[in-house]
Image (cartoon, rainbow over all chains, first blue to last red; front, side, top):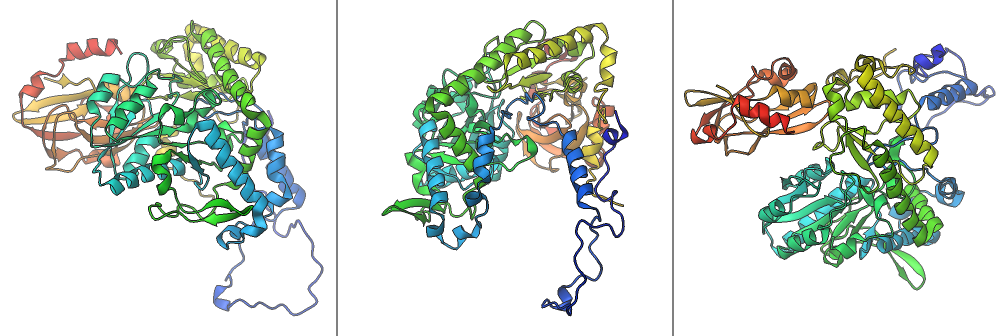
Length: 487
Length: 121
């Protein structure tokens, strides 16, 4: 391992006074500025000074340090880190799409961007088809933004009917964003415990459901990778009290072309298209979270939509009950393009196959590992499986230690310590895009880890051994976070 | 004598005031604690209400009051030094409560019952 790989130097450390990427001819006219002098810098900006080659080498080396889906197996549970097909990148990179100025929308220049609006329309219609919802909006900027939009529409629905609602129900296996969204929109959260099968406890749910409940937020299949066979009943119970059903689409990769939330009885759904339909979000974004609604919520959709009049797409504003403007644009349009490319490339049968293989792969892993780890909810799962290092932890090796061990073998760690209701949880989502050899290599490495944990548990403190950083101090990072560069 | 709840709070009564904290088992599960949010003095709570909030490197979790009553004191030390919880969970109270129903305390688990309960988790 070279020193270059051990330490991270910033581009500022490499700066040399006077070094340039570009040499301009000597200025032979008078220098003038039209800006007021109060707007001008008093001292030069502290920019790094490097040659073009220095910059290229710096960023190429940085990118090589990254553990990325294009380089490594990345079974991060609930994140759907699938291969991002190059055709999706190619379409998103087409100049007609990528060079358009976003303000053609705010300036109402719809006639100049008919092709773009057609793709927005295509995506909305395709998402309706896949989910069974009546209408979609692609305006949210990310999944959590979409989630908030969904709950705000539910809030407006109740207000418009004069319903006084106080609570939102979530299961104890929910994503953290669900109770966070409910709280931000002004609701109190009721958490329902999971039963022995990993689903929301049905009796407790029925006992807590009444006319004070605004909505129920569910991820289907849930974060344990389980499909609740009583899901339709859950919807029926809520609807009896005019409580609406919110579908967190994070795990849509399990049911594409198999089941549709709209048919099950959900009233609103957000889809993380950057998970399910290409563009995995491991790079830190941008995300995209289109929201679909049932008939009941159509009138509350936000400002900025499109409709076709005489073969021309026009912008529309929301109706009189619209919750208003949540974003000036059609979300992160580049992600929308990748999603529409992905969907049209696969087609309906392709999407069905995708979900089927995602489920098959997760079950293969679960069944290869079930004799080595604790398996809290049996040996069947949907697109991801949750196993537990509870027994190993008694001998001193925790889920975190196993996760760190994997890094030395060129694999990204699975999600650990989530869902919160499983002790020493390890949540594995292989996705459909991995082949059997990769899955076997992962399982073999996990089994090796278990055997080693039983023989020499103390060794685990030292993993990973091959990377520049072994165990960063998480506590220190949270309490004394310092991300500011100082020379 | 300490009593325990199923959600891992402990209660120790002195006169009509109850000290409430979370068990060392709960703290072990949470890992290094990095942030705590405490209730306001004089606020009233019923048994099972979410009263305080704890955040660790692994998770964020509500702390429920195992008994009803009004808050008489909170442990301000924990705001600046939440890590005290990791050093001595069973010896660090989070809030004190004027007990409104002593019967609720009898219904909680003894140390032995709590130890047995932990084994089932």
